[in-house]
Image (cartoon, rainbow, N blue to C red; front, side, top):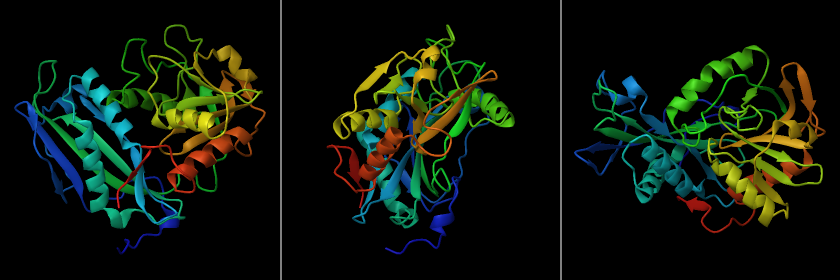
Length: 341
């Protein structure tokens, strides 16, 4: 198969239109069979539920070319299940797990020429999403919905290596204790935009959100979960009902235990103890792990011993092992790798 004429090594992390996308519509209580289409536009009512009351959700995952030349994606069943949980919370119809995975596979196959070659550092980003498409003027769920999957080739999240970033403790709240922080709803990200733009304007890469009820416990950032490494080499990650269950974080926890023999704790993490950790990172699909070198707490700095030059040693082992599994350098746990072609 001939690849598209793209300068893979110089791709940024942005949108490039690919040839095909999957579209399925929910009407009269059922999903249709769905189609692959070249049409990248979406036509909906001016009064659509998504436009009036933000009834929308999404997922994000990647397809890779492995060392063996296979095109694969990573744990799409977990993305499917997380979207199911999100849809239930937003009163949206569930798109079944098996159909979700099939739609992802077929969309990647249809755009295989856009999957970057092995060793380029680039990947094919996959964006499944759903929204209320029928007219809604009273505050209520839409009656009709559209589920779509598109792809775009992206470069590595970090050009020139994953240098540690500086983040700040935010005065804004990301999610209420019994709100929607645990689901991947578009509204959560809209609410975080002011805070992240403000952080960037102040010279910080991200916000550290504390729990809304007490502002004493670490939650997450606007788009990633935290991992911490203790001085005795233990992996600690915050536990909260208002944290999004990151697939990358869950995978890193298993990698730590089963591949590296690292003790793992998922528990409440109080902000007061953050200064005592040896390493800190943000984990998510885009970068796998973004190392944090420094946290600014209203002018007071927490500097991690791992420093501002490179990933801490244990964080680096976690990163190398998980990306090694994804790229086919080492055997994956059963069910983690979905071979596409």
